[in-house]
Image (cartoon, rainbow over all chains, first blue to last red; front, side, top):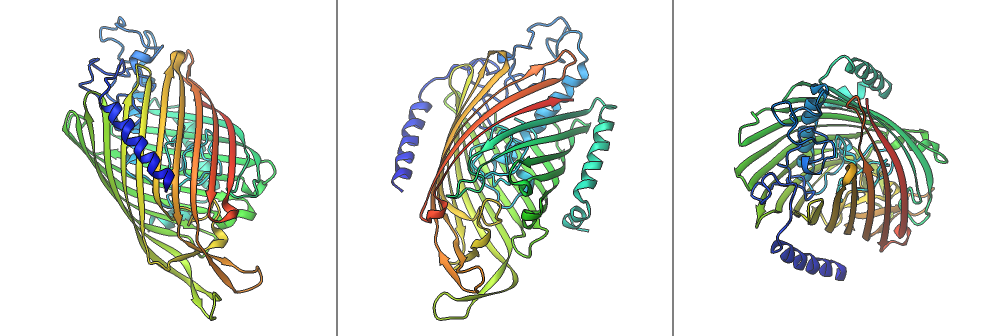
Length: 151
Length: 379
């Protein structure tokens, strides 16, 4: 209980400091933060453009080619590439985001076999761990590095 | 026919065959994403107790997503994991799901409907924990302004332990909350959730003057759970994201509510029956060359439902025990996306995790160290 109170105090102080500190955000669409939305709670702007649908915002994506000569920027990937896989990746990102949003709605779901983290090999106590993931998770903890169906 | 019955009829080999057919067909269509994952690792404490039993494991899995339209996703996956020394812990998992976004992308309303089924099968020693589950739900989001979203979710879940008379559970989950962006790029989410669960479990009838009880037939016990969760996230510089959360969960059960202790290990249906506070924090950093690193930590203060322990294996005497745990976790992962010339992607990942649990019940004082590597391959 003592640890809980300490953590609560630390969170409150940290939260106040953070709220009043301006952020640098290359991830943001317009660079000034007015379009910032983070429904998946990873600290990155969900509205940041990701034209090739690989999960990396254009500003942080080494694959991204600014002002590509297809007349429409970088709509479907690198020049000369088959555009269709990129369209499918964008759809995948859209549904991944939706699944993350759904997962974030509950701090824990009891007895949900279908909501295991990661590739799910065996053991998991729901605290979010496991790249390979090992078990029947209860979805309690911070997000594991590999959620089902996406990042 | 209920989801449960359909799932029961679909044995895991059948699911695997269906998946294989889908995966082969997937190469014929551009609207399909397929991927395979291989991995392996070591965990020093498989059963989350003071015995500290460790083992190596390896896994292979395949997944497929098909988009018949821009608003519909059909997904299927299967995975097999094998353990070196505890062979019966090896398990096969399969899952199927469909998600439909029923509203246009331009609308401030988003309504998504989801249905899913999943199954898991262990070796002989752990067949008591074989499971088949199903879920159907709807999720609703409304963009009030550019910086405020209202979110709600409702779903019905059914999870069956197919080889056990006890542990199967079913019920409804409801959640609602708001997500706000304030003072630039600070994201704050406040969410509340409610769950009602019905668990199949044996009734213990007290027969003696002390703690002697007799186990009788399975009955369905209903109980309610409420929770509140506060999440905060923001960027720290151009390439780093921070997230923090505080949550509390409350079980609404009678003071004398108990569960049988003989299954209170990590596979138990009752592992999740605790209440208390939880705190978590995490950092995500995207390095150049598409390298992503994530560091997270969490602290849980758990009070479990009282456990009835069997006095001796051969006796019918049970002893009641309370359990309060403080669990601390720390994890780190790093992955790199490698794009191939044909547009496909390889993603190797490394994960390290550490957990320390301090319990009022000595048996559950434990530490666990785990490390694993995996490779995700876009096909």
